[in-house]
Length: 555
Image (cartoon, rainbow, N blue to C red):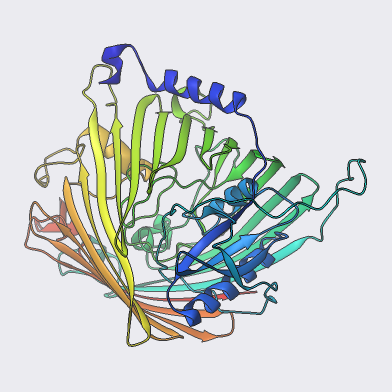
């Protein structure tokens, strides 16, 4: 494709690096908007959530409600760092769609005082994602004069300590032909507990972060690692191919595993519009809701329940915020091969340019991932109260000369009030050119490229075309119900996932859920034929109905 013109993603990444190094900074007068609301009550609730996030992240900033273009917007302002640096930090957290708004005469502050941080229950609400809107810029308020030209010394802030305790229980109702019935009673049951300790320390322009996770897994499938819980309670079980092996098995038995893992260990240097991160950290690219074709870095499975913390990689990340609000990223992820040798052919090098065009937002990506070239395009466009997103990834095949193939999504989502409570709906179409046109039989093999992507955890489905639709409704401020369906458009099979989320106590959350398939024999979401029993009976795997309970306590 692009190689036909003598241009490869490596050339594009080199150009991005040059642009990154040559960009210059300019002063501006902006606030960072993290959400827009038509209802004052919803804006106030969002303001409290944002203020608590700022406190827990150790960010010296304030959450305010401002009025602009007839909307109430929750904005973050900071006096100790430029708005572009603040924008970058917020996008690294839960506010990936944050954007900058220039302060002018049409922007009025509704709540100027900083919101006092109060304990609130951490929930996984689906907020309406807002896109940047054009506003007329006018002269900003004059800046305060400096009283001294002496450069201030780095200030060491108090260490931030947070923790999360999580419990997860899963019961699977196995089909009568499932091979696990040879060893386990039906239904199978699995349990896991996870204590995550999080330390953040800021000294001047340096920010240090360490997350330690202790995980106890027990149950019927514990002897196979995560087993049946792998795509529901998604946790990293090994660091076999990462640069640093920071996972330790403390105790292992027939029905249990106890391990410790350093999931974050990084230092970040920040100065004005620059940032350099070194160490183990998580990266998320693209804008998929269920499927993530533009994110090859440990994406969540479509049915993953626990999405609080994405698994980290050992990397170097350089970021540059440009004066016009655009930003550039250059990333290198280091890995080891099967012989535990550090090799470039199993690493990833990527560059991303994120920017705005009129009222749209875009991302351009060029990468070399496991020695395969990869280019991507993401576009986000507001459409009335909804947002439409398109992610397209063209990837080179495993073998030299293999044709390039397309993975892509198109999705739309919208949030709206129903009887003074928020409702949310979405739809997403996914296409995977590496997928199979029909399900494999017991003697068939999976294409090498697809098998490799499945083993790396980059894709989770076997075929080509899928449609995911879902909705959620807030019945009560403490009770949210959600329902989603993932349908295989080739064979008509479907996967249904329903969940009730209850804020059971202060800083605690309970989730009750069900995952089940609707399929005919031979469909993707039906039990998959894997082998024959000694008596000559066909044995299957998968296709079970699963029920889960998740409890999390944040403190």
